[in-house]
Length: 381
Image 1 (cartoon, rainbow, N blue to C red):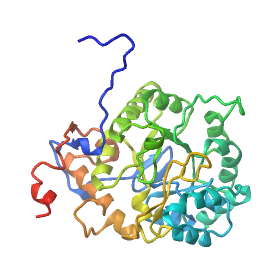
Image 2 (cartoon, rainbow, N blue to C red; image 1 turned 60 degrees about the vertical axis):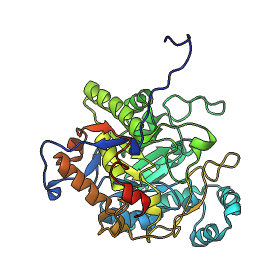
Image 3 (cartoon, rainbow, N blue to C red; image 1 turned 90 degrees about the vertical axis):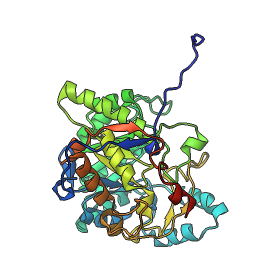
């Protein structure tokens, strides 16, 4: 049957629960795997980034995450650049009734960013021995990212719900030129978020060193409900990886891909890497650690939007330590702890010694992967 002219078709798109990784023809011991990754010279021992969310990262958490081998990204448009002392702010957010939480966040975030605090927070992380990765929205990156770089930041992120190279604005005809920012700051620049081949290719051509993939999958984000936009993470990652690989074939310059949002388990991490991601960015699992500043409360970067909030404050509770989340030992069988160990074991089963080799793992569409043969688990018997 032929479709009417102009009628859209809907290609399938897959999330984590729709796919499975196929074991390899050769296996290796997990202790033979190398899970380190790099962003053009910015190296981390484990491919985990903590999201630039105030409920997840403060300078102290950034230091602890660095000690663990990963990197935590501090939100430079958030509480820590609006308030000198944030302890009371966190307490107020945690104690607010659910129905008043969004209004309180809107009020707290209405205070202007203090540029002086941008450099100060970087210095605090560096003096603690941590890697200083900091995030800006496009509207502030041109003004404030150089301040962070001058203070010693190791990585600059430019983040928005959706980012493109080509953006039109009445207020700023020129806007943010990513290629200029890359030259100005002199450190690796990671941008996002996106979910498409064409945008990924254009962003890579701007000279950035990493691209964040994911629109709306986070547990505290409601962009998919409010705006209706987004692509499931497996399909989104694979499409952006295809653009990264095409760009690499053309230029010989490798741009790292980071799957950002929606990851809950070690299996989700493994599937992201098998899709071609070089690292993952996670929010809510880190928000549940004892080291997180909001003590189990969690909210998204767009929760406090003054006219169209796209997120909600949720009470996740404090469940475990940062070390248990990343390295175990795990006391649960649901895959939510020992994420690094899960990645190493999976890499062993597919015979991949490095993250790049894991990119070659075969995957299949398998919507029954979590239910097949699990009748007793599902019934609670």
